[in-house]
Image 1 (cartoon, one colour):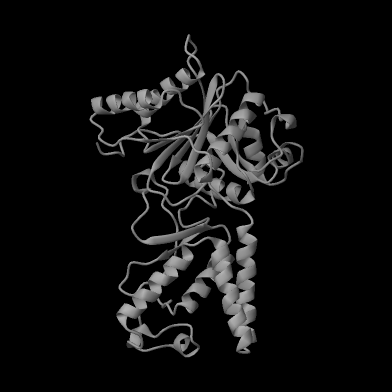
Image 2: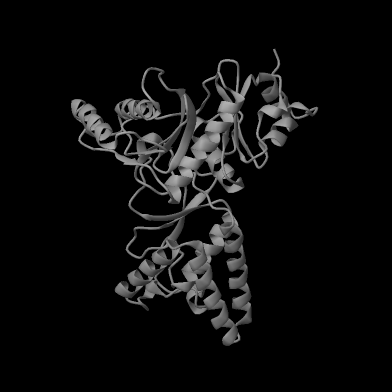
Length: 382
C-alpha cells in the first residue's frame, strides 16, 4: 500500500527527516529548512529520476528530528548518514565527506590541516590533536585556515622542503624549513594560532578587522580587501549557531520529562545520534518520583557520563541510588546530574522539549523512535 502523505502532520521548521520502509529500515535521511515543504515535493510531483521513483515507492513511514536552524540540519544530516548508512544516501556515507574540522597537527612544527571526524563508536572519542569546527562551508574553512596560517607564519607544506619557497618571499610563511625562525618561536606562534581559533567567532572577526585597518594604514589595499572578504565570510557563518556537533569527550543523555512521557536526546561525544520518546511507568508516584525512577533505570542501562534533565525530585536520594546500582555493576565512574538554566546544556534541553511537544501532538498514542539511543555500555571501562 503506497504511503499516504499528510502535510499537516509535519512541521514547517528546520530539521531532518528519516524515511523508512515497511520493515522499519532506514531508506533515506534528508534535511530541510522547511520539512513540510520538502516532503511535499516527494509525494505531490511526478518524478522522472529512477532513484526518486524507487524511494517513494518503498516509503512506509517518515520520522523527523527538529533542530534550530539550517546549519544544524546540515550537520545532523551528515552525522546521521554516516552513522546509519541508508541505501539511498550514497554521497555522504564516506567519512571523508561532509563537514570538516581544522586540526593543528601534532608534528614537531605544526600546521593546519583538514580533518574529518570518525563517527565509528569504537573510535569516536576526540584525539589529542587540537581541532576547531566543524565548518559547514568549505570556502569559509579554507579562508580561515589561510588567514591563520599567514597571520602566524605557519607552514602549509605536508613535507617540509630543505629551502624556503615562494610563500616565504611573499610573507605567508616564517621559513621554519631553513631555520629562519627558531623552534621555540615557531611553536609559540602555533600556540597563539590555536588560541585565536579556539575563541568565539566575534573575537576572530575583531582580530581580522584590526589587521584590515593596519593594512589600510600602510597602503596594502589588496591584502586589506582579501582580509575583508574573509571577515565577511566569518560574519555570515556566525549568524547561525549550532549545538548538534561539539568537541567533547563525554557521553550525555538529555531527558525532557513531560506528564506521561520522556524525550531522550542521545549524544555520543558531542554528536547527537538520536531522539526518541518513551512512556513513563504509571503508578501511585507523583511526577518527580516517576522522573527520578526513570533516571535511575536509564543510568543503570546506559551509564552516560552526564544526565541533563528538566526536573528531578530528591537529588541526594537519586544520586545514592545511582551509585548503588553502579557499584553492583563494578562501575567506578559516577555520572554528573545537571538541571541547567543557561548555556549549551540548557539549549540541548530546549531542543529535546521541542521534539517532545511535536511528537506528543502528532502521535499521542505512538512511541516514536528516531536514530539510535546508546547501544550498550561496553565502551566504558569499569
